Length: 126
Image 1 (tube, one colour):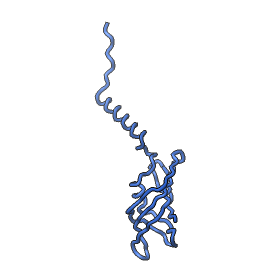
Image 2 (image 1 turned 45 degrees about the horizontal axis):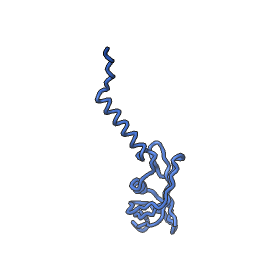
Image 3 (image 1 turned 90 degrees about the horizontal axis):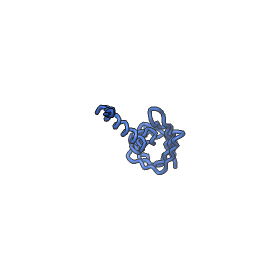
């Protein structure tokens, strides 16, 4: 008696299963949407943000970021929040005096939404 042949999966279905498995592995090792923002994303997100100058009465509006170094980070994946303490060198859009540099410590708070991580607040710190 001949045993029935095992069912054959098409090459297309095999590739789909392999690609799906690859995506699952990538999401499991840190490429997931819940991975906190990296330095490049924080640098991009700071452009256009404004905060009170900790050394004076003016507000700082970030036009560009030259340097960002994360000193401390606290990520709560259950609450979907991330707090970053970073030393930042940025160009400030100062309406009274023209472009100016800001160098100092910033506390940047993120919240994760369906669309990804979004800045909730930026505070200058001494």
